[in-house]
Amino acid sequence: MKAYFPSRQPLSKDWFTKREAFSIVGAGRIACSHCGYDVFDALHLDHKNGDGWEHRKSQGQGGTGGGMRTYRWVNQHPEQAAEKLQILCANCHQLKTSLGYLPDQPPMTETQITFLASENWEPDYYED
Ligand SMILES: [Zn+2]
Image (cartoon, rainbow, N blue to C red; front, top):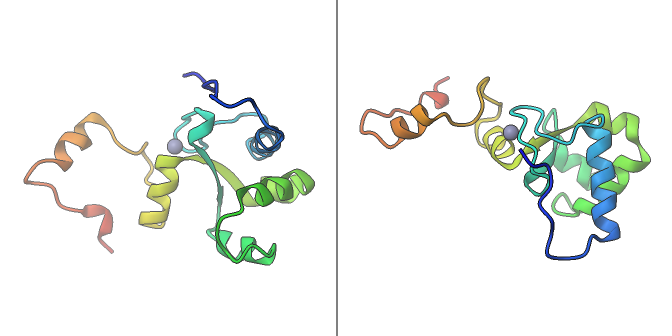
């Protein structure tokens, strides 16, 4: 997989700040820690134990948005960041948010996609 698609915009200072933050969190490997997907623009930083809202709030961001402030925090606190955060792709991040955990297998196999569209599908992810 190609790790980086050239952007239509010239690379900004923010882009380099973001790339440095991802490199710190991923210990030099910029890819989803769950499934290995590595297209940079579809990668997110995830708070491993789900306390992102409180963390952002403690930085005075009102709990939402402010990605750049998080990247700068990572670059200033690399050890804490590597412990607290992980890189997830947009798919895995969404699954973790929706399910509250990450399924052992990568998000969707061909079989699951077909099965999900069938009449026999039941949402077993949501069982207690
Ligand atoms: Zn992933």
